[in-house]
Length: 250
Image (cartoon, rainbow, N blue to C red; front, side):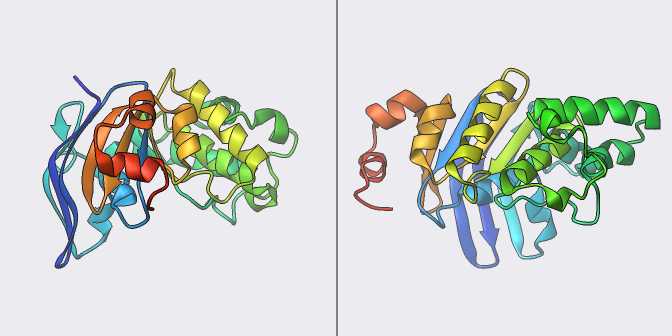
């Protein structure tokens, strides 16, 4: 059974129909890249998994989005628990600006009642998983905003990992970073996939080709093609996919 699965997923914002009958299954402990031109529904799909459209009054979700076989929109599920199990990292690094490096990572565990003694272990473990510990271990009480952009993004990943999610969603996590910081994020994701299921939205097709096991191509709210990354980039089945991959549009 896939860990995540969309079945006939449709998303509307008011009168605007943004996603059309998306069917897609994601296997556990893989990296899945979602590619496509701006405005094609990539981020809308990603945010739907994390229930973020619940915060938009005009949003309407139809169909099913299954996590371990249960619809995430089943009202009997606790959304706070679900968001802990499905972590989210955004395009622009968003550490809590008034908090230290330590408190940023400790925020989630404290919220979930982790003891003070255990929180220190969780913070260290999460920063190590995010390949940031060696760079910050001597200044954990410094403001998170003192970090560089790439470090801030890895801090946000550590913050998501601190509540021990099963799935990590990333919405263009390296688009604002320089090539060196981008390479660190990519290396980190390749290490993390042995423990987590990762879904990443990216405009960078080279990035998708480098790090993902599976790739989904979205265009104008529709899932055009989904398959092994090598097949998508080297032998796409759909003409629309080939046109995008080869730069004929988008």
